[in-house]
Length: 50
Image (cartoon, rainbow, N blue to C red):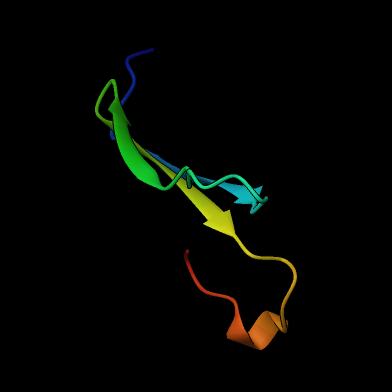
């Protein structure tokens, strides 16, 4: 069976005290993978991509 189409996915990581944030988008074999850091130490309604 031949693979048809591309997929996309997102990885969420909890924010830490590290100054480096792991926010980035990657293409692997035509598929989009996004890495996002979230600050979990705040009101969920105020959460946004760091």
